[in-house]
Amino acid sequence: MSMTDLIREAYIDPIRSVMVVDDEYPILSKLISGDDVAEENDKTRLLDVVKMCRDPANNWMLDVHDGDFQGTGDVDNLHHSDLLILDYHLEGNGDDGKGEKALRVLSSLAQKEHFNLVVVHTKGYTDLGADEGYRAVFKDIVFDLQTSKLFPNVPDKPLNKVTDAIDAWDQEQEGILSELIDCISDLDYLELRTTADSPMKLDENRRELIELKGRYDARPSDEDPTLDTLDFRFLKWYILRKKGEKIALKFGAVDFSDLRWSTSEKSRWIKAGNLFVVVVGKDVSTGELPAKLLEAIEHWNPHPHRMLLAKLRHKLDEHGFSFASDMLDKKHMQAGWLRELLQCKEHELEDRSWITTQNHLEELAWRYKSELSQYLANVVRNLTSAGEDLQEIEGQYADKDILASEFDIFKSVNVFNNSIPVDGSHLTTGHVLRDLSKNLYLVVTPACDLVPGRSKYNKLDVFFQRLYPIASALQKDSDTVKLSEEQILERCKNLVNSKKLIFLTIDGALSVYASTSKPFNNTNPNLMSLAIANDGIWNTEKKVLAYNLNLSLTPPQVRSCEYEVVGQLRYEYALHHSKTSGEHVSRIGLDYQN
Image 1 (cartoon, helix red, strand yellow):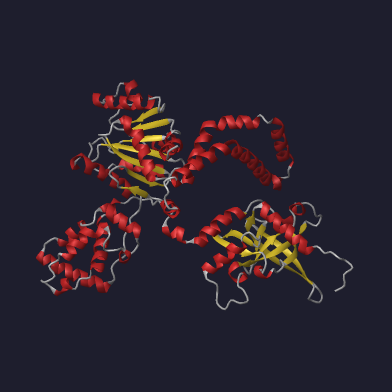
Image 2: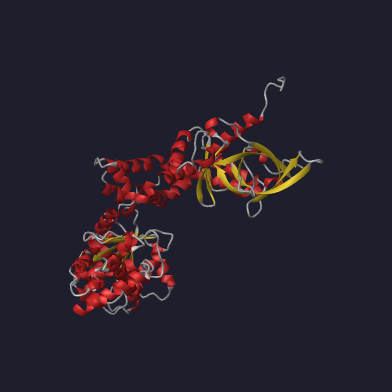
């Protein structure tokens, strides 16, 4: 299968319903009431839409809206369709001016949980000509889906030199400042601002700066010394700042961190939040819109994993009910799972419910295992079949700074494999606790010994294993300086399969810890035993109170300390550490003499 076929499977085949929003189209309510005033050519155009939806290749349901939104409710309902075909000018005053209604619709859809495909089918700004009219609509949408982007002000000293030079330049060429600002188009400004947050980081040979650089090189430098000594770096900075100020009102009210767009003549598209929109001129027939949408999505080049998840969503929409029926038909299994829920105690209910949910999700995964695996494999085969360098393929889907951070990639993948978000309501094997001194400890007591209610004293005796920050733990005796990130990564890779490393997300940061103080020296785990109050059930802040008997004092004293649950290992990894620690705690050879 080609990549085009695979993208069609993930994004076009799932379309079942279409909403068309155009103020010139007749709508059913007005046709019934007799209030319809649509012209015959508009009815003909709508008939083309009906034919497109009824085409056996599409087989889509259709609804039509005239864009007369009385409140937010109408706009909110638009995301219920799988594809929205939207006219840009809905104000009923022709095809010129900013399409405020359409922009409001697009911004609203971008913020929805549902992924929205939109084709803006427009005449563009008719007073600008066809091609420039489409460009203007496209530009409006790109700007409206982000907040104002300004470069910082030029420092005072170079600013004075630049303004003096421009004043002198203006004596020779009146209005030169406006001309210099117009050397950079609105969209080129966005490209430059997206590339760097400081103009000093921008290469003066960039395409977007060629015209400005040409005007600078042709300046009348012989007429005034300030023009002769004018530094292009600061002129560039000044003009970009002024350009940003000039277009500040074009921006919208909401920022989308994943905003991307293509100005390609072949396909003008924008991706923001949960919105993908392609701008198509009305010189393109209605029947061609599905092909134009597919072409735009292919040009977008969605990440293979995004395609996989889109495919999964489609499978759930298409076959979710039959899957549920098949699962529920396993009546003995469902009876057993329900009995476990009904018989568990209140503090166990959420944990037990999650286990039951996981069971259903596992069945779901097995149901679609073969089909989804084959789909992703076909995507990868298409990526690698052209013999393209693997690094170049990776570069299509991740920024350079992401790919350059090998340690973060290493940590991210292993954190996912090694740990899960903190789960449950009481301590169990694999929970990671932090004391007031920020030291971390792993619960290694078997889960069966941590079930609340086992002790009549309302406490649990729990074994903890100390965890050590990776930078200090990997330091060898022969090392004379602090380890670099590259050295830490290399040593982590040497140990990653030795079961001596633990990968966690602590307070939102990816972290690596060692299970012993010196993994390269084969040191033993550092274990301690504490009595945990309240049967190990933590409070709303995920904190528990521990008691420790200090025998070094006379008389011995019990010290209390509060611990916070900050991480959790997947059960299979937690089980390993529990087993390993148990071997160190247990004793053999009771007749041996010290």
